[in-house]
Amino acid sequence: MSLPASPRSTHGHVWSRIGWGLLFLTASTPLVADDTPVSAVNPMNAQIVETTPATERPMPPAPNSPVMMDDPAPAPAPAKNEPPAASQPAPMETPAEKPMATEKAKPADKPRTVEQPKSPAKPKSESKPKPENKPKPVEKPALSPTGVDLRKGATKVEDAGHDYTLQGEYMTWDWSPAKGWQLLGIQVVARGDGDFEALAYPGGLPGNGVGPRATMPNHTPILEPTSELLPPTWQGTGIAGPAGLVIDFCQHPEGRQFITRDGHSGQWLRRDGTLVAHAAKWHRRSQREGALPPAGAISLFDGTDSGQLKNLKLTPDGLMEIGSETKGQWQNFHLHAEFKTPFMPFATSQARANSGFYLQKRYEVQVLDSFGLIPQFNDAAAIYRFKMPDLNMSFPPLVWQTYDIQFQAPLFDKDGKKIQNGRLTVWHNGVVVQNHVSLENKTGGGSKEGPEALPILFQNHGNPVHFRNIWLQELAPQTLEVPSLNPAPTPITLTPCAPQCCEPVRHHRRTVRLRCR
Image (cartoon, rainbow, N blue to C red; front, side, top):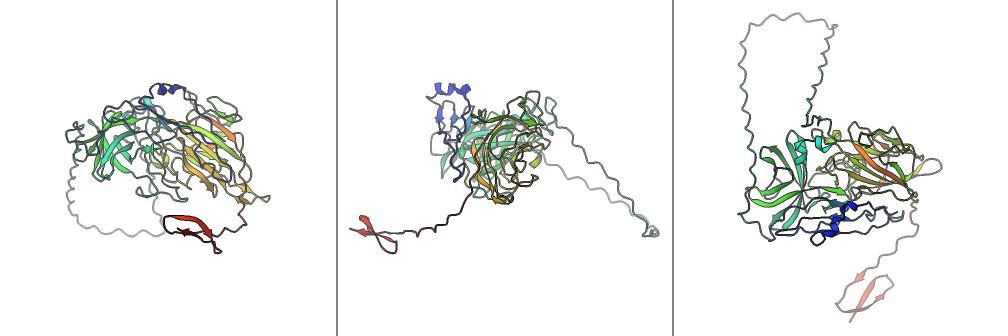
């Protein structure tokens, strides 16, 4: 089944500027048959990347990816295979360090008193009074300039506040004696009250220069950031002050610092404060955003009540809220959905914009604000608590994201015994992050596995996650995999000889020797 192309009429201006723009197309490839992984080839659409005309060094083409960029690329670095001269523009001033808190004075020792006679012991039969249950402290609301409590989450950019402006994805250059100039992607994450964390990706951003390095193992909750299975990253922390946001990357071999005043541009500096390169914010979106349902597909939600969902609740601007489920029940299907997580800077882990797609109410594909994190097995696009995604393709909150999910139900015999696991493939923002995964069992709090079909549930976890453009197309069931009864052939080995050889001669031991001239 080929996935339909999504309309991109609003980007026709790219063609008129192709003299300096960058345009890369990847042919849409149909999915293969059931005997091979359904996602052996990414069938998503092409990437369109547009950049600003370069003044010193043109921005190299971003690698082929279903992720596209809306805004201009960062200012270029010098086109020399040597470190920038020390006469580069002076960096922004860093905010003054906070004075260290002085040590509190110890209270004076209390005067000793005359020891009083001990009171008689109470009989054991008397029970001690139970301590009163003290009420838990209530956290004060963290109000944005428009009065929205950010502890509960902002669902609109205009309500998110200044920290959201600084948060996001930036692109710049880094230089090292070993590798010279290379692209560097930075994901900046707001943690509330001016605190920030960040990940720097040598080579670009996930989906634009950085791809998965391996298939993640099952039943592995978390990996160390330095694991060879993960793309290399440098972690950073910082604080926003009067001079802007300053993030230190101590893990960089030479030490690096990223500074931005306005959340639109910035500087990438050495430890001593000299400039390495300028940086600019990137606004990306999935090429699958706005994908139209193919012929014969079922539109579950298109902004109106199509009669396909139970417990449907809409926002004032026509978006679907959490808690709905389908009236129909399907065994094998392709599900397309678009979702937007709220901005919840004070929340962490599973409390940060949590929802999920419960396929057949059994298998959950997690929805979470996992932007800028090392992936875990309960993060966005994870098969909940079973397998983490092969790459964290999360966009920042309040940015529309896409899931394309292909599900093939497990097979059962006539007695209801499972004889073959189900299969699941997930594209997150157009990139394969779960590839033909064998589902060993239901996930989390899902319903028990069985041969009967069940609805799809859009999980209500209490966070204001919103959805739009949801459609489903039924697929053929998977075929039963029968082990081959034919023994594997005896391997044939080659015996090398002199450079110039003639035709090989086969011997009775099935070893091919090359008769040399």
